[in-house]
Every structure is written in C-alpha cells, then in structure tokens.
Amino acid sequence: MWFLFTICTILMWSGSDLFSKMGTQPSDKLSHFKLLMAVGFVMGVHAIWQITVGGVEYQWFNFLAYLPVSAMYIISMMFGYMGLRYIELSISSPICNSSGAMVALMCFVFLKQTMPPLALVAVVLISVGIFMLALFEKLDADKARTSAVDRKYERSALAIIFPVLYLVIDAMGTFLDGLYFDFAMPAVFYTGITEETVEVVCNISYELTFMVVGILSAIYVLGIKKDKITMKNDKFKGVAAVFETIGQFTYVFALSGNAIIAAPAIGSYTVFSVLWSHIFLREKLQKKQYFVIGMVLIGVILLAILDM
Image 1 (tube, rainbow, N blue to C red):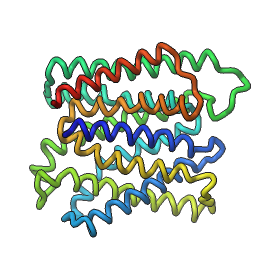
Image 2 (cartoon, rainbow, N blue to C red):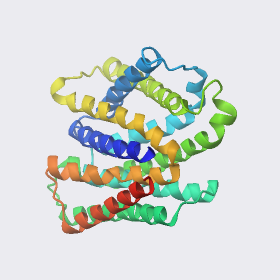
Image 3 (cartoon, rainbow, N blue to C red):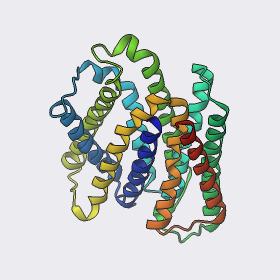
C-alpha cells in the first residue's frame, strides 16, 4: 500500500507546486505569507474534522511531541514559497526536491538501513534524474537570460538560496520523521495510540501546527500590513492548499511504510511539476529533459514492481 500512497502524494504535491506558482505574484512581497495562510486554513479544517467528525482520538501532548518535525517541514515550505517569486517552477522544484537523495544517505549512515538491489537502482535513477534535471534547467536558463528579462525570473545568489534551504531543511524533517516512526513515538512520546493510528495522529499534529502558522500569518498580513485577500489574485493559493493537504495526508502513510525507498520516490514529484510548468506555464521542454524524466519514471516503475 505504501506505493499507492506514494503515487497519490506525487500527483497532489506536483499540483500544489503548479497552483502555488500560478498564485504567486512577483510584485507581492507578502505572497508567501498568504500561501501559508491558505494552507494553514485548509489543514486546520481537515485536522479539526478528523478529531471531531472523524472520531480520531487525539491527545494534545502529541502536538508538542511532533513539533520539531512539523517545524522543519513548515519552515522549508516557507522558503520554497519565497523562492517562487524569483525563479521558475521548473528550476525551483527540482532543486527543492533533491532532498530525497540526502534522506537516503542519512538513512544509510545514521540508521544503517539497507535496500534490495532493484530498489537501489530505482533510488539512484530517481536521485540522479532529479539532479540532472536541475542542472539542465539552470545551465539552459543562464544562457537564455538577458538584461531585459522579467524580474520574476531574475536569479541571484539570494534567489537560489531559497530552494537550497528548502532542500536541506525538508531533508532534516523527513529524516526526523523516520526516527520518530521507528524509535521515538513507540518508545517515549506517543502514549495512548496504536501503530494503526500513529500516522493519522502525526498528520493531525502537523496540520494543527500549520493552522497556528496560518493564523499568525493572517494576523501579520491582514492586521499589521493591512493587506487584502481577493479572489482574482489569490484563488490559486486556495487550490494549492487543498492539493497540499491531500498530499500531506497520504505522505505520512507512504513514509511510514518504507521510508528509505518512499522518500526519494516522492521526491520525483518534481518531474511532474516540471511537466505541468511546461504545459500550463508555457515553459519549453527539451529532448534531454524528456530523457531525464523518462529515467525518473523508470525508477518509479521499478518501485511499483517491488510492491507487487
């Protein structure tokens, strides 16, 4: 089942990437805060629904226990949203989501985890493919840049640092997730819940944390900065929030099922983000990019075979 959850996460998060970019205006300095507001609202509604209507037994101590992991994910997403103001989605997404390779390396070094040879081939294909895609995009984009280019696509050291920060911090969050599922939660932190419900409880904790961040962002944007939310400018942010919430819900099940393989596989959603950006945002796709995308998809197919 972990593979089905992985595929759903890939589709939802690539969609979230697309709509986040479509909802980001380069001139809007508060755009990332508005995205945090939208995601926080949707996730908060979902978490409250699960606790009340859904009947999930939730102890509020779990909110604090999972806070370090939640913080890593939310901080990384904030930097990712900030980067969308400056660079193309087809460049930002591959850089951000190269974190899967870092997670796999951390699992090997610190957790001494192993994987079947076929899985290793799949992980290598996915990780190398993501790296090559990011490299191709950067080299080609650098050649095409002119002094008259639109500022929303102007890259600098400051612009590139946002997706790089996402990469590092998101990898730390994913690695902590693996530690929590394997050691911390059963042994210390999460009392009163079963193995069958631990993923749901963790997801609720994450969504409630995002709700708090969304509320704080709303206070800053609407209260302090006196800005407004309009359907014309911000509708895509709401769609992105829905996709992000669904993807997060399936993500925890995929990761708990097989973290060392699922993590780099989920990182492949950047391939679909690039495809959507070329289809809907009219960015060109070259032959070498098709080759790399095919290589990553072969890795995903290999993982599917392993799950049979």
